Image 1: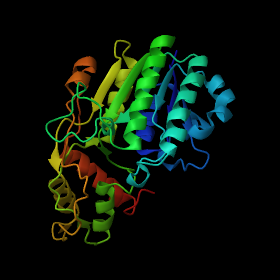
Image 2 (image 1 turned 120 degrees about the horizontal axis):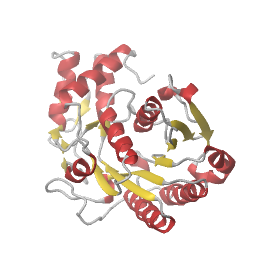
Image 3 (image 1 turned 180 degrees about the vertical axis):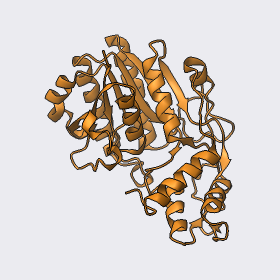
Image 4 (image 1 turned 90 degrees about the horizontal axis):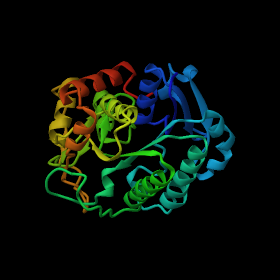
Length: 312
């Protein structure tokens, strides 16, 4: 018998790839998306999922649908305000924290046996030296980071009380086809495909990017293994300079195109080194990233080129 799963945030980048992976693996999948969400990323699997339209600010409106879905495993990826302009929005608490706890309670009543949440490296705060390990103290400096940390801790305690397995990922950054065009990699790809000259920081930051399909595999594998529980960092485990990543993208499109490095100053709070130590996740699940950065960037550029330089 197939496992009944619920994916929140399924219309987003990572959520859509996770949903597709679960469907292809034979799971019985329901997705919870905002009433206004465009489901274009789910084209091809929409006929195989049950769509529940509800916002985290009004989980009660989806009560009957969640009870009917009766998910055994919940993958919670939905979140309001993931872009930098909303990082200190009060709705991080009123919508995200409160809504996530209401969702957990509805899922618990419906028979949830495993809760898998996707948090953020922002839970650690501004650690500047070395790779992030799960043993580091959590010192978030934005309402976004604090809210993610709160949801992870609170759902962990509630799962312990309810006998529900709890898995919490602290995600760094994903990239790949169908990405949010506000992110640097797709934004640069779009500009270069149009023959433009992107304005950029000097690009000395060293960041950890994980190909989206690899991230979806890690999350689904952890959920499938009954022995896996706890907090795990999710990234590639490698850090590359932003300059090097952008130059690779440019060379895939047209090596002659100019790049405006240094035209944008670093932010006062600029993170210069962001890298995950994925030892704990690798040892618990046997998972390791499959897609090298060069291959992932090539596949991403090819997807945008084949879609007219846009995410649609």
